[in-house]
Length: 114
Image 1 (cartoon, rainbow, N blue to C red):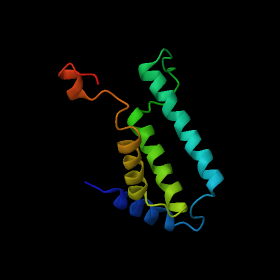
Image 2 (spheres, one colour):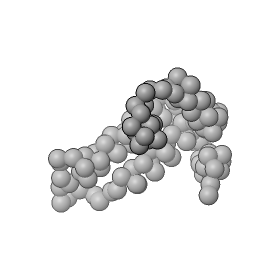
Image 3 (cartoon, rainbow, N blue to C red):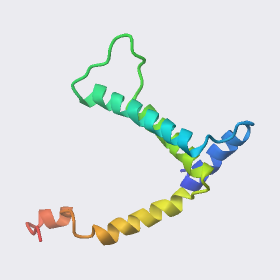
Image 4 (tube, one colour):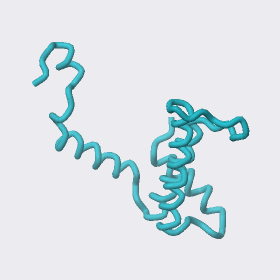
């Protein structure tokens, strides 16, 4: 299984072979927004009320998530952000700030909601 470090390195090796390199932060943000829109469209087709037209390309939620992940990794790489470290920081924030925000499964199973 690949680590986030592996993913970031693999994307960097791919992008580094091109003279143009990474896009600017604003262009990267636009690409993220575009990919998020494509993901939203696929989710709406599969789980929403808007069926896909017969002329539309058959994409999957998995493909769109992959595209979004690729662009996110490009964005992080272009800004020298280690996504493993960023993930660890956000998880610590959720563990502390939101420690008692949600009902834990074991509490629900025991009938204790406090």
